[in-house]
Length: 584
Image (cartoon, rainbow, N blue to C red; front, side):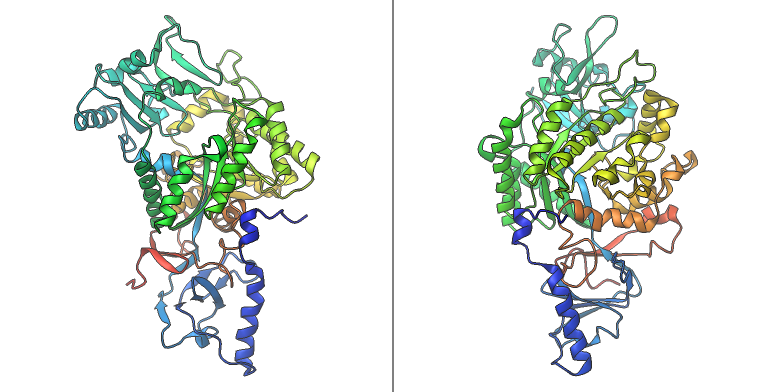
């Protein structure tokens, strides 16, 4: 059954109709049956063009007019499109690809995380103390110092941070720092005091206060919903900060060859109000949004179907301003080291603890059926094998109720997927949305394997198994949790090895995919889940000229060198947004 077109899709032109017309014009011109076709504005020649189009995966040249691709072929085939005003760029045999996409990013959170008091560059607890001390000095007074970017792995064995480390910097100002993954807060004693968090403070639903097992005193970590107890002290970002964060993300992503992303969960309020959407509008209207954006509205687990009218209104607002919407993000569970991810069987050494779903199965199923019927994409955050199963069960209920409605549903992260559930992605037509950089040996993985034990550690990020079963992969970085660089992601996807620690060896090497499969998962399949595949994702006549030129051919170099490849040029609608057409 064909997909139900979204409102935005219905407004977009049919690129499928453009292809045969353009091909016919070129054919008639070659036979002398019609005047020569209109010259191209830009002609990229002498390239190794990987189109990601099965009918013709490789070509040599691409012609662009008015920001769209008008011809793909050999240099000789496209010579007739060269006119007096055509800019011809000889790529010197370099690799030309469709621009990359990202199926899971947090642009506003990521941009702000690099502007307030970033800890991303810290590698030790001492580094964090130095960075925090500099931020305290840079903002005199007694207000909150807030930042993002600490790594769970620096707090073994369970990723729980300690207040004493921050107390060594200051006990007179509240210090509040969010983990790089966004599921935990690290606070000092002053922040606990000002927030009123004591041994007697109850844990909220879907969250917990990390406590000393002997005394019950808070130790400095706040998990999941408990983060709100201290977040209320943090000044919210201004409109200018929100806009600057989106611009920062666009420029950063463009430098990595990315021209489209899925904003994986934005808040909304009454009647569809959203400060995030307001920021997108301002950036887009000022001409600074050099990317195509799909947005998912974050489902409020504390509410039920009564939130639907506001959610629909927010989605309509997004589409009216030119974004792709009709997507809803569900947070089904948490993360593994802190045991907030939902597991089918108890954690290793966890005393029978399995974690809990953040939304009841019945509530998720009810929402999935209703939203799927209205043409919404269902997007689930699921990390534990129990969370993955709950999401798949809800999607199965939607399919049973509504048929194959073509919602392009997806599940993100998929740290652990039980073998019984791996074939269900293909059976239910659900995309598996992986963060390829996570599928390697690194300190966080050590915490994960300790938490779940050896048997379930053989089910980590089963990309190839899900792909072989017939499902679709789509890659996203979950930036700023991990590097957004697709070339680094490609390397890990095909090697399953940490580039910074190659001696650690591959993580479950049988779950590696081929380079061709990985490129698809960063291009046309991201475009598919973002509902943009009619416009971008491959190099084909009629599509937008979102393209990237690399400094080497990743298909011809050792796989363990792919991540060192550089982006020389990124085109968005045929114009450079990174690099220069006058490349050496």
